Length: 364
Image (cartoon, rainbow, N blue to C red):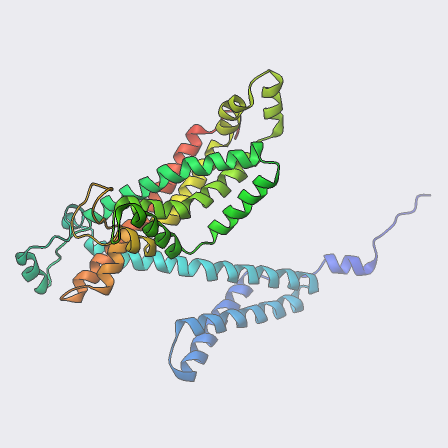
């Protein structure tokens, strides 16, 4: 006769518990929001921030209690942790969406032909039109300056950063590699204004005091961009399987050729993404460019001489000195901020496309 074993009664009751209906969390959420609105309004005026905090805490408490009563302790703990993570995700997402919404709402009004084709070299007729509330002036000079200075920074930092990453991964084994790693870590946290002051002092040694140029601004941004390129490229190079290197070396291929033909093509997608992140890191910098490139009112295509304005500096300058009436200058500042967001979005899209095209065929 065969005996059958049955699980303990406590385990069966633990697994065969009730299931909370999906309408209950929704009802609790509505109730928590209503209580938050009434409570915050009764204390001293309605504030969205305090209402959200009160509603989130009340929802977490009530949904945990309801789950404990209807389900069990294990399900209640799981639901509470899920709620905490959802609240954390919402806390991060809402400010990001709010920033995008505010920039688009305020900056879209200045996305017109004058904004993209004109500069701040305003004539007396434009001044009269501006005093009457007309939208005058543009940001073409700032867009051109942003592209030139960022290109200079990329030309300097991408080769240096990539070669440094190759050294750390493929050749660096001793104390020198450790010193380079620590230096890169220090440079990652350097304040941007320090990079600007360093570039200004460097060019002052050769060209004299008061020198402002796009090249100086590009050097300042390269100091901020290089450690980001080094770190991202280093991580991507370390992800390349050693079997690929060993197979190439076993065929008698030189190490430098193995790096050029095997390692770099395998990791090019991640390297491009890292370079894009580095560009996004520096394209919005203001402080170092105020020191090095200065502020210009017209287009300057010569990065070796003369002041050059970028979109972040243009936005800052128009906000602190908007002119008369101030609404026109502030509108130009929001338009420049929106243009920066568009440029960064285009860069990320281009990096995605290039990484997909350049990815080795054997990788998914």
